[in-house]
Length: 556
Image (cartoon, rainbow, N blue to C red):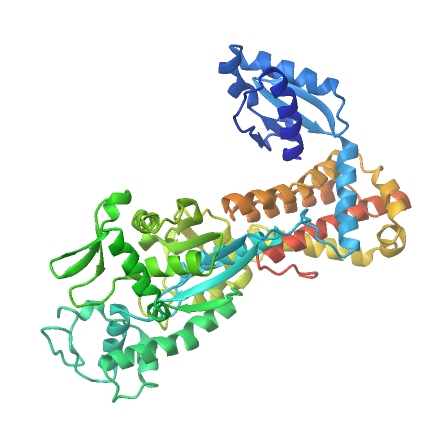
């Protein structure tokens, strides 16, 4: 409908202002007294026409009303805004479309066409040096659901976990393993005993927690620190990270090894390109890149004094691989809060390789705390100083974990309310939504006319829908038909947190309808109409919960 309104407005506006180039913004107002849709286009036109926004809005509303568009009951101008009120017939028609698509087994989200656009989605990608933390879950669920939404719009999405299996953190992991095994360490300048206290320089870089002791038992004591680190990383990936990902219901198509970036000649090719462009230089024994030429605050090290490539070098290679070699049209990275400020240097490096800035989208996921009664909670057993993702899921359940994380925009800090997540009442948002689905399933089970009256008889269904006239019925339809546009917008702006907000609002509209209107009545035609509305609501609730990776129970 937003696209229809934009087209209608564009046709009227450009008759008087042919050179009007601004994008027409159409939104759904929070207060329904301002219509089902509203636009501020009159404010954008005010300066060009030299007239007050209200006068322009009134003129446009009059012209649109005169065209007699049957999709709207009325179009009015209020305080410079143009408000559109959908007609009851339009609402009923859209309701029937939901049911028809469901009956024929087609898509119910409102899309029809696939796109050739290839999207690469990199998320979670925590170092294989320990179990996934609660914080990793935030980006993990976000990325998983974003991929679902993009695929629902026809995009080809590759979900990838980038495994940092080389570098200093792997060596420190090996040192941690050797220390747990009772071996001395070769941290430069020190050889601490196994019981070395944390005040010794270098010890703070080692990994701690019961998982280190568990992994150390599986590794041959005769391995070097480097070999022990590689083996430990493999074991942590297989025994801790992948099982946690599976328990969380997160799907990955690829597990991409950082080590592979330095095979096959791509590393040498990129370095030659940077040198040819005079973008690298030597200083203090290290190799630097002139990222300041492309907007970065300072130049960055590519190769350290000891000859080891930096994480930055690997990131350049990784993104060049995604865009130049694997030919993805769009790359989306979901990073943790510790990567704040890292984006400009990466984009500067990609600009140096002639990769357009719009090829890469970086989303930063902010910090999260587990709280109960306003106080931070510590429940970790294996990790020692952090809460693992598996521990959180075991504590509150997968559905609550997903819903609570998805409710918040990733750019905001959040407190995860442990008590609320575990509560089985309508105060708990995921319970409230699932209860709506279960209540609908119960209604449909009790109905004796479901299959014979409307699901197999399209004509009768269309006739019956004309009986839906009550405010609560029409408001529920309004909410149902918002979904296609919502998914389209999320596919463009990646605001996944709007999905749980939508499904909560939908559940609220259904509960309000159910409390105010009797579904099964003495009038079979009215009953069939209301059952069709209830069935459509179940379809949409189920589909949205499925996109979110959350169960849609028939009983609770």
